[in-house]
Length: 112
Length: 112
Picture 1 (cartoon, chains in turn purple, orange):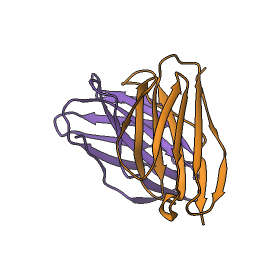
Picture 2: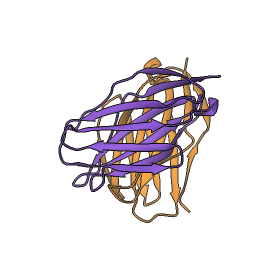
Picture 3: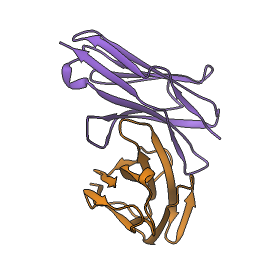
């Protein structure tokens, strides 16, 4: 089955710098890639997604890149702020089944 | 707008006691529903998913069971809790395979 790997378990950046979280997947049939944010003690909150028919998507300070050949996708957070500190999960979904597969999460710490 | 409600918010239970956690989704018909478990600060483990009433697929056996008695309701239960059942239980729902599931606020379970 699909396996999603999230390469950074922790990431620390200075406020105002950019943060990049990288994920890879194994199943070429994966076609939908959402990202979630989990603040301390809370549930997961959807932040941005990308579908396999595009290779870049931006929503304000969030940019998602998708490289289908390398089976890699990444979340870029520009001009980081302390409130960006959280655990970020990447995920991959295959159209033909009803499963969505999550990475293990990246703890992002934005230092003032 | 789609909403998802989990109950209870938190539980403290004794080892060997029964458990029932609930999830109700509103605003979508025939949603896919998912149960996840997260150890403290840990990764997400998908437990069950359901694409229709009465049908539940098990992903991981943790001495838990799930049922979908109504289109908008998903129940997680066990007759005998183990210490290892402690953690954060999350219900998620979505209508299509390529749409990010919406997560409920979660139930925090402590088994003593």
